[in-house]
Image 1 (tube, rainbow, N blue to C red):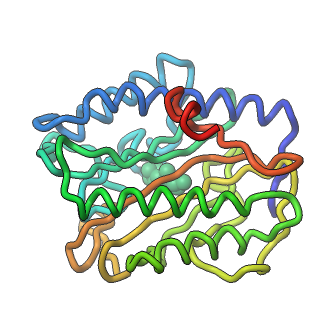
Image 2: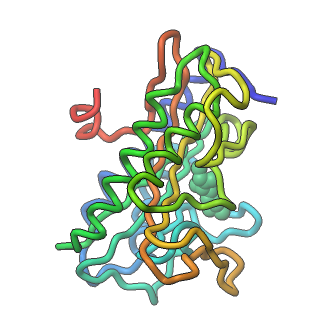
Length: 257
Ligand code: MF3
Ligand code: CO
């Protein structure tokens, strides 16, 4: 069942969203060669807790950290580690969930470490574009499948693949609520969108084949072919006439609104 939120609930989710955005601003400064993914996560934890939030990822099925930090061929759920050191040319996704007074926001950014290849740049641009083309369809009266289809078309028309085994999701009191939102689907399919729905839209894109594998740690998801991967995510609220993104940084607000 999709839970429609009240104005008060949405206000709390927006506070959580501001904290997630603050994490991107602070961790963005650390995205340099020589820094470990452990250090990135430690900074994120500091921001989340100092701003009065909890991090629901920590302890979720025993996941050990508040964020996922996923480098290059790691698509999602990279466990922060002292042993994973960022290098020039890497692309690194940071997936952050914050809970403020019982309400969650969830977002992911992929960062470039120093100068990256044109190949990696194009993958990052297409992944972000897939998100924006997807949410252009997010408005009352449209179907969830309209968002999914727009994401899939953007990704595949650029020669990439969407991950099949992982999806976006509703979000609110829990970090995962109904509906599940695959990054593929048919226009006109699925539930009708309605004002007050809150959704985490998150294209997970593979440069090469669509297949993934999970490492022995039970979490880390990599591309099977070892090619690059990318992830971009925001929490959105369906409004009267469209949607509002609630996890943008101050700089992004200037760019996108
Ligand atoms: N933020 C992820 C999502 O989009 C969840 C991370 S899995 C966890 O659903 F184990 F870290 F919680
Ligand atoms: Co999510």
